[in-house]
Image (cartoon, rainbow, N blue to C red; front, side, top):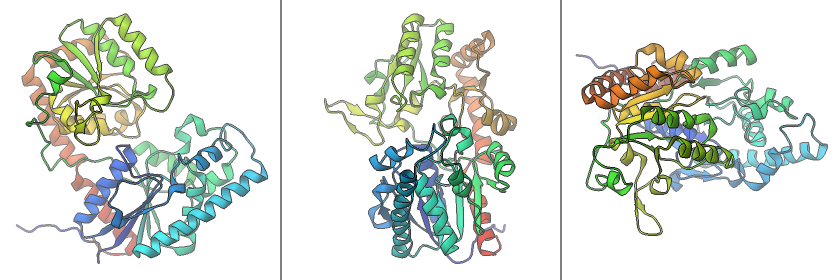
Length: 429
């Protein structure tokens, strides 16, 4: 039997650029997946950002590239929620832009970069000077570029009123030739074409479904006991940050309606940076519902370790194997990494049908408990049936895993990235 090998000519030196490549945010995770895939195709990858946890020998740290750098954050507050800017603000934008251009040129020259992959910095305007600097470097160098867009300005309410509409049209995204635009869902693809007359390929978020998920081991086997759950409890995992768009109040309502003392909701991540009002609302709902909810963010980290008082720290991949059910009641997602993670660990899922899920994921035939902004009686009974039937959970897990292998695996991204590079260099795939 012959084997089809994807090729893109000679190996390339590829530079990833963003505000940060650090931690477990969606942009960082997807960029690192791309780099892993590209490395497997024979290419070398290098990194520039304002916050980095990538290997130092292939990285260029530029602190001003970080969107939360004090100078950048202070500037951004002058640009949105208002309709005009002062001349001094314009000058400040261009001063920062010029400094960042120097950093970009230094990065390109230091690592002899041949292909650029800006990650979201030409989409969402979290850092206006960096987007402008990137756009000008592309115009001046003509370097082949794959612009990976995760979120756009028009998808976020806080960017609706702006004093930088001229810059948004120029750089978010720009109109340079030799740029392959990539988005993560079909809605973004259509809006980019409608608003900006830019064509884009879809490369959805992916996961390494070709490699089996890790399971229980000596280290993580005691997690249930460590967080106070019994073996026969229903471990219902909410694997997201505590921010309003994650819809965690729906998970609380689901447990209230289940009315089963075995049901325990475990929230693995901390609150986001959007204030404390949402967390307080959730705590009030939990008290009113009289349900058992465990916040374990202090016991979950990026790596295994110990807390300051000597307790074990687990990773999210240590938590998933223990779950009986995953709740994912988000109101909005660009794609849905937690959805893929739950299927990777072969877990049943309750999903709120957010727009991207309804358009790009649901039609593929996944077996899940689906709600539409309301925890109805049907949703509650379906959830109860799934929790009480290990056989049904296994059957759904098998079906869902096979679908992800087909549509959201590394093999999918590998084919699509090979095609983008072939387009840039005029080489066959």
